[in-house]
Length: 239
Image 1 (cartoon, rainbow, N blue to C red):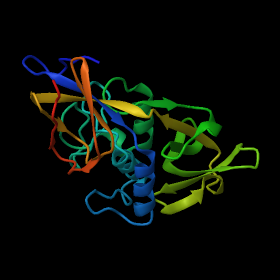
Image 2 (cartoon, rainbow, N blue to C red):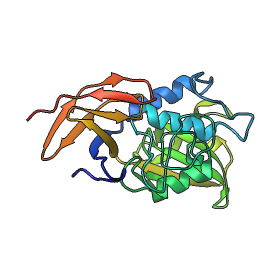
Image 3 (cartoon, helix red, strand yellow):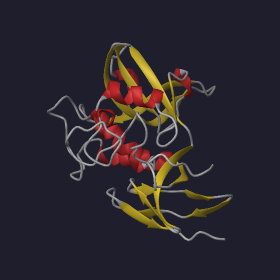
Image 4 (cartoon, one colour):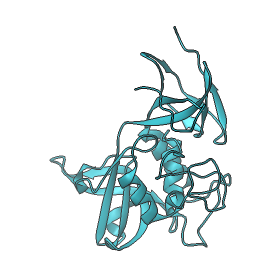
């Protein structure tokens, strides 16, 4: 992976490979399925909070906000903003159809996903978008457990969601007749602005595995917890 100059003249960007921690995403989902995290806006009375909740879960699992390119996924405030900058809220953060489009179209930095994967291939930490047809998608949920029969065949998923609030609830009990499975790669890419030789600006509040790509050298760093807004991660880059 090489550095890319996507931010304009005079700005370098550094590629960082992020590991998606499915268990961390599931733990967040189970913690907040029946409640609300007051650090975030709640859209329950404004179209529903389901996708906002799922986005928070993915972020908790280490998938970075994406402010690069035409497809963005971010929340820096409640004001709608689909521009590639660190301001406002993208439609993909809180809208079911918009998130599905982002997952399908995104390349490069941010979430790496397969949309319309075979329904029986889901894992914990994956997402289901459900409704009554391709043009009638109404709800997003996070898979928290996979239910199998004695032969190991998937027969159901337990999910967490907001609006309605459900914790480890069978997806089969919803009654929706159309499901889209979104599966996520174990690794995704963050392209961040290079500030100096040993630090980058980041957009996520929790990461589990971080690989710093510096020319042909890479180093792995341990887990930590950060605020989601303009965190600066100081990383030692070995020569």
